[in-house]
Picture 1: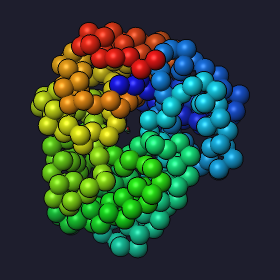
Picture 2 (picture 1 turned 45 degrees about the horizontal axis):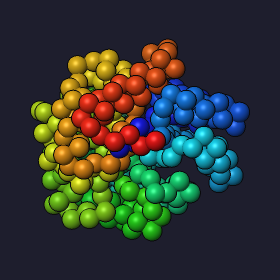
Picture 3 (picture 1 turned 60 degrees about the vertical axis):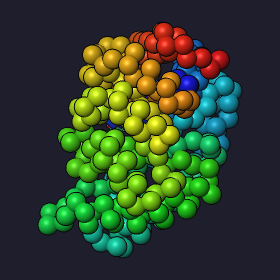
Amino acid sequence: MKKGLAVAVFDAAFGPVVYTGANEKEWDEMFGRTAAAGYNGVDLFIDEKNERELCQIKRLLEKHKLGVGLVVCICLKDQGVNFSSPDEKIRKRSVDIYCQEIKKASIFAPCAMPIGIIRGTVSEGETLEDNLKHLAESMHALERCAVSSGIRLCIEPMNRFEANTLLNVPETMAFIEKYELSETYILPDLFHMNIEDKNPADVLRLAGPLIGHMHVADSNRRAPGMGHINYDEVLKALKEIGYDGYLSVEAMPFGDRDGCARQGAAYLEQKMKAVGLNQVL
Ligand code: LER
Ligand code: MN
């Protein structure tokens, strides 16, 4: 299992990102801090970056021996991307836009990309059934371009205050199974699971090989160890199912970026050791 850290390569106002950098010098510095804190890789939050900039970022990540767990294109919602829109033209345009992002992100492959808030929400007068049917159509199209780019698409169940579909892991598993989405995985986020899932450890066991990436924060969205989530149970469950991907700290730094980064890595390390999980050095 690898430790990851959520970082943005732009001046992100976005909440649960620990470091942000607006240019090559700041990216170099931020990746250095991430590696020094003990992480193996990053969840990369990007805005509109061209291929040259993405190559620069890749070169700097390699310099600091950091992998990439997840690439998050944070500006797509503002571009109107909505994979479950009742309007077929919007769905098609949304798939085309994300396929371009997937192809650009393939320089970091193999890695994951999320289907979070851009999955869209059930709109007025629309049934959940119709919304998810439209989402499934888009997912089948997205799978084709993701597979050819070495990208793992992961649906992120999100709490009811941010989404109104696929709020928890079991619902998301049922959706993937019903629509036979053979190349779609799940991105469980412990912050959301603490609100929507009855027992995170049991649910992670249920999800098993469908887990494509993990977000870890604590119940208050601070770094792991700062709230009441039972990490012993969570890590025991992940060990049982043989999960060997990233545990990426996507937490609110609350003004202390270095403290948040260090706390996350140290606590994960301590809990991973306690359950006998090998450290990726
Ligand atoms: C993104 O990974 C996430 O967890 C959402 O809460 C962002 O709003
Ligand atoms: Mn998340």
